[in-house]
Length: 113
Length: 112
Image (cartoon, rainbow over all chains, first blue to last red; front, side, top):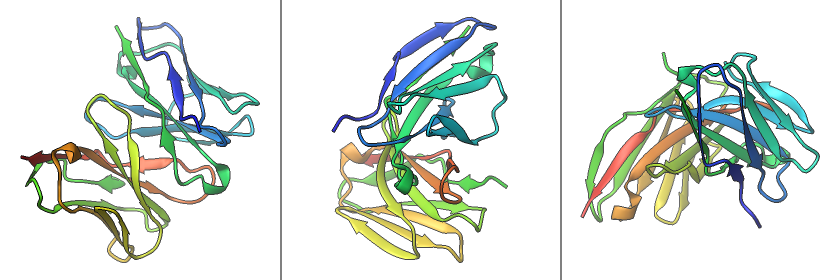
């Protein structure tokens, strides 16, 4: 059974640019959630995808968007990057019928200069 | 009032002792409760989940839930230096599309 994987590991962007982060869910999992973790804080829920549709969203602006593909992998896109977007971005996968238990990937560290 | 509150610590515990970590939550509709362990520079790792009042034991870990008091705790018995990490309490309000709401975490240090 393969775990959740994310790419890239680290990324440096400048303010105003756009970024795409990728996630492959754990084998057998059909739901993907994305979280943002700022330094010294707990993760904050961005959104969740199931059956290729967003079906839950936290308090994040529309410039945060995503996709889920038929193989359950997912992308997080962030437009018009701001300095405060610098954080660890975490992808978590789960099985819909047990969506409470979420398993995290290693994360992507995004730095916005 | 923050939705999920934890004492940020650091909490220092001697090796071999019991570490007690606490968490309170504000939403009475919360149904599922989790403890994640996060080592510095790493992602959170699920160590315990609990859904009903009472205690749940798994090896050296015991999770305790009191919905009336809106309180969740994690006990770590026979603490080891490898238990030194940040422990995140997470709450899920309902089924389906709700994400997890996390506290800021408690930094635990096990002193050899």
